[in-house]
Image 1 (cartoon, rainbow, N blue to C red):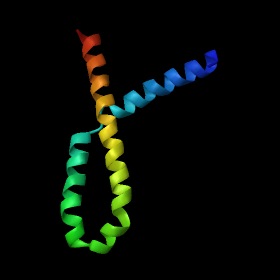
Image 2: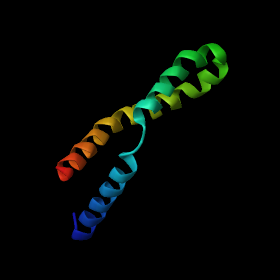
Image 3: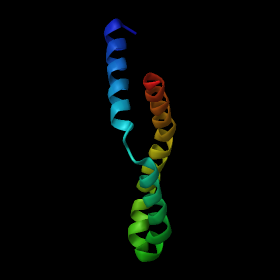
Length: 80
């Protein structure tokens, strides 16, 4: 990795943290859970077409939660 690649990666990680820290992932995942409960009954055809994409987004949100928690830990460390 070059110095330039290192600096770019660091900048991108900081930007990613800034974007991720305030996302309401709990609320987002709760809405997905509601959709998973109701959508197959309300509109089975739409559910069949869209549930795979919804599952992918859900997995991304679940994967982001530990990252978000680490961001908060670091914020708390700086504050104390």
